[in-house]
Image 1 (cartoon, rainbow, N blue to C red):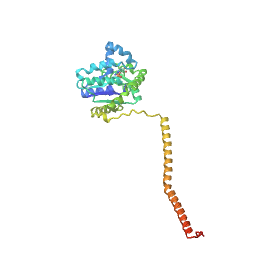
Image 2 (tube, rainbow, N blue to C red):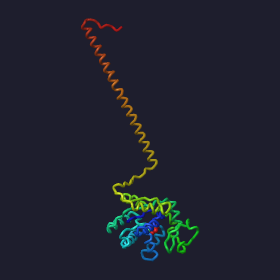
Image 3 (cartoon, helix red, strand yellow):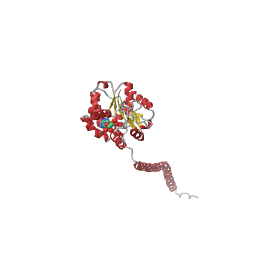
Image 4 (spheres, helix red, strand yellow):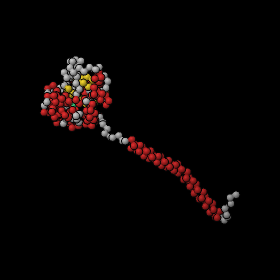
Length: 296
Ligand code: AMP
């Protein structure tokens, strides 16, 4: 199983990755966790990343790529991995493609967890974590408790889960990470999963999507056409209607002309025949030396 989990902050990537890891024995590789670990250990890289993370922005691509490369080189990732939070922009996705090609481990699928914005806000603002076991809780389901039900440790809130940072993180996601949906759809790797509802049901959908056979890229078409604005649509519709009316009038005229053509032809021919008959009558009367009989 070699998959990427895509989704906004708070969409449940971490939780679902842990479940997949437990069931399938492939490691969850979370760029956020790797960075938080570097921050906690106070490494040079961690010091560089700390302020950027607390501001809700993305850490530079080379730092994150270095961490991911080292992590994927460890033996437990030889039989697969669940990438959580990486890649987060198109450059990272291109770097990942190159890296996976190098190590001969192409992706099986990219799973997108689809969750509404208001749910994301609620989940992120209410998220609390146990410092001992790492279990993630939400204040809405804790009934006022502030300690871990398992470990008894005081739960903490991530600095970037503070309300003033959440909005910025979602904006960064929409601008930089969301374009990866079309990117992976074009490669035929994308599978979208409804990310709301019971955890078990979401997990079942994740599993089914992760194990499904990949689609050939040629069978996936992504429309890049922009939806025209309403005004433009109305104008275009009016123009099209006017053109249709013009064509209809022209067609009616042509039809009428065609219909009346044989009648007019017949009338002309009849007039010509009558004239010829009259002339012939006059000539034969002259020959006979008498005037043609007058009409009564
Ligand atoms: P996460 O735990 O995935 O929500 O990540 C927490 C923070 O770590 C993000 O808001 C970023 O500041 C940083 N981060 C995690 N993954 C990446 C990545 N792939 N590229 C850049 N920054 C990242």
